[in-house]
Image (cartoon, rainbow, N blue to C red):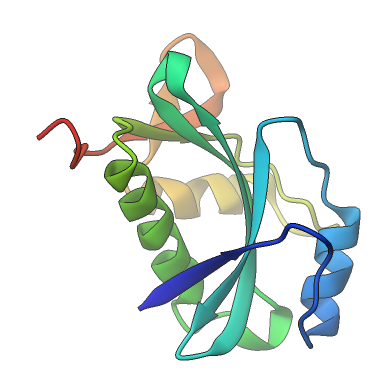
Length: 138
């Protein structure tokens, strides 16, 4: 099970790579940043905006430290984000698949999200979305 812990007053964890990502991450007035834990271990960083007027949660950033990549943790984090959106009553998750690391292909990242069920958002060719079932509205 993935647990999201909101970052309110700075990062108090132990992972240097996560700390660096948080420092370089932008944060808007609606943005909430989280440390992601699995079985008590830090496995990533997530940043998202809630947009009730659009009935969606926007994923701003999903980050898994280099040493933990290739283990399926990104997929697990994305599934947990979608579950969070559903629990909060949102009908979709939106995102802009733009890599924040040099050398990471935008096409490769977009293809990964498409394999997770995301599709181009109508009228917004640079954004992807996934319809989810809202628990609140079920």
